[in-house]
Image (cartoon, rainbow, N blue to C red; front, side, top):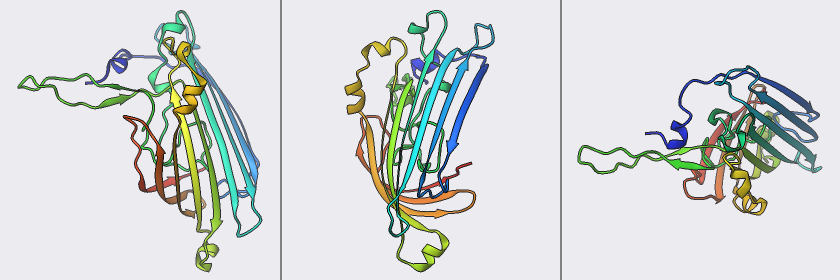
Amino acid sequence: MSSRSVRRQLGHGLLSSLKYTFKIDRRNSPVRPTRGYAFVSTSQIGGLVPDNRSLRFLRQEFDLRYAVPLGFGHAALNFGISSGVLFPWGSGFLNRPSSLPERFFLGGNSSPVCTLGGPTTLLGFKLRGLGPTEPRRQSNKSNDEDSETGRDVLGGDLAVTGFADLSFDLPLRLFRESGIHGHAFACAGNVTELTVNGFRNFSFKKFMDSFRSSVGLGIIVPTKLFRMEVNYCYILKQFDHDRGKSGVQFSFSSPL
């Protein structure tokens, strides 16, 4: 059975929102950038319809990317940082939880280099693989013994991710001519709750100390439509109930 936090938000809701996105991309390639920068800012306000079922929230996201050529072997250093914050508004908003579908969830294997759009990706962790969780309600078996039912991932109202990626040509001529190249990367990120008076207990130091992180290396096969990666990821830091795992992972990412 679902956790109490999930069950509290069961029912019908109405979403009416206005979103504005400002985007500038001066990189020489969205699939394998070796120079330039990109910036995306997305602002959204929900609850424009005067209806008590309307989801009322303010959401702001920032995404910054920068690519620096190293001057040898077509090598380049890409790094970036993404952040997002979500807060409800309206009567009693300080004591009301934010809407679950609008919260930030981290994890997944999409490439942070070519994917723009706020804090989401953290290589080595499963989709929605970290952050606040809550145990699902346990049900009794026919013999009245409790059964293990897992946990629900609740997401968060504040999320920050960052990465550094070093790309380089592989020594084989066939790979260089086809654009296949290698890379080494490091990722870190965290997500936390601010609503239901969670902001009163927020500590910047505690938030930074609880960052999850991973490193790895892999081979990238770029195409005109997407970027395929075969990576080996090693988890440096995770906590109880996080779903991160060291090992080989495959991913397909599109800049579109």
